[in-house]
Image 1 (spheres, rainbow, N blue to C red):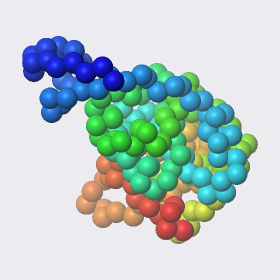
Image 2: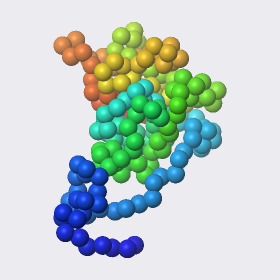
Image 3: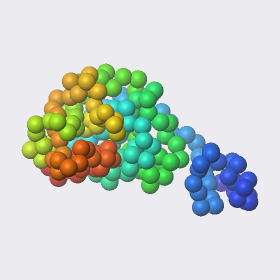
Image 4: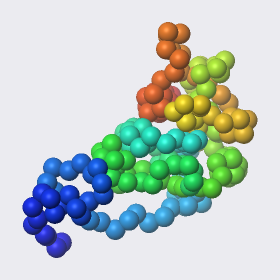
Length: 195
């Protein structure tokens, strides 16, 4: 490892604007691109595999937090869109707290087609929707599951919602409209592992 010692201003100039650091930075190679087929092959013998699909999630801190929860609860990958999702960068890595080393990030151009491929690989696509009739606990999630979560503002898009095998909700107090995306993902992951 080549070590450079720099003053704070020079270090700040090497890093992207707004990068938060504590006086140390490590330059690494970008992670290799992982395709959905790689994840399907990797999980072929895992009868309880869990994947998270994020439909137009844009908040870097939410994505990082979801990665951290995914690692904590054993999810193998998150799937995000190519065009409408942020690049995996420093703020996501910081919020993920090391989870990028344990959870694959798959980028896809079309979530509905990705869901079709997962269904062909015997995954159940379970969408989280606050208006669903059934709760997560009532669904008793087991087996190969792809948890599908919508954007921070508008939730699941129509085609994504229609492609889900089942819609479930997290029962919350009516005084609050919805949960933060990363909180909902964490609850869903916990409920899946609890079963």
